[in-house]
Image 1: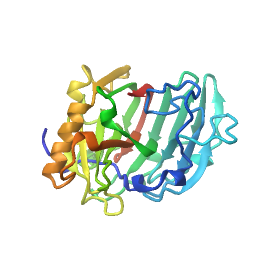
Image 2 (image 1 turned 30 degrees about the vertical axis):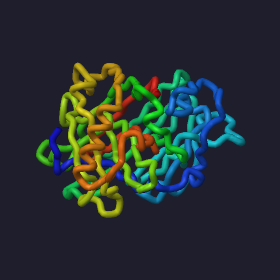
Image 3 (image 1 turned 180 degrees about the vertical axis):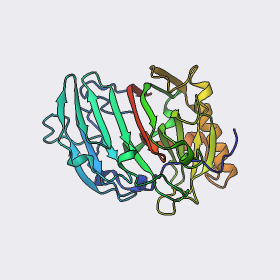
Image 4 (image 1 turned 135 degrees about the vertical axis):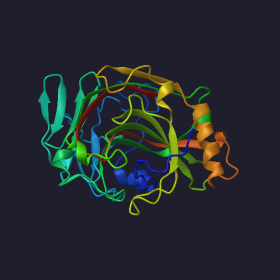
Length: 316
């Protein structure tokens, strides 16, 4: 796997914010439609979602999405982050739309169907005055997150696996061809696992399972250190992206459902070794790693209209 210097990476500074500040807690065992083996909690969004203000890294709660349910006394497992957006999804009035509940405006959509399918849409033509011209220019993110105050020890699972199904239902460039620069402009869908050192060093790495990248039929593997482009939001930690060639057998932007079922241990071990070669996780073994958070959604540094659906998420 090659190191790629000019690559987009997520801004995850807020990962160190205590869970109590987000209003998220572990659910009691036996929660509705929730498997005790699944580390991804409340996949049906029965307890809604907290919303963070669009300012990157601020981790300031601006509201809560209830998806049309009475959430009195319930604390959400999910967080919606919407970095660098002009609008706040917490200010949108949700509505029942057939078999799903939807929050939508011109620039973004979050909807959850009765069967648990999640829809995430972004239209950055509503966000950018003009295409980005510098690597340091901020870009739009729309993420669903979970953060675990007591991280899950990876070694507690003999064969740690991630499963989900996803499809890209829309990906349209809104940029004139002469303005498009693939080094600056893209539409990328990702599933991040934030893996940290349980022994207390504070080290973590960003482990990415790619879903879609408009620049490739199948997203390639790569790694880089998240630093130098966005001083206000860089983590200065490793971002390791799994090679999509081992996950998908056809272009991920073809509008069809694609199933991911991947054993994570050997790939995380490889990411850990690369992190050590770059000065992180000194003396730390796989048995000392824990899952601190997950991030699922869009990073859109270009001017695109993009939408995806994701369902059947499980990490066990």
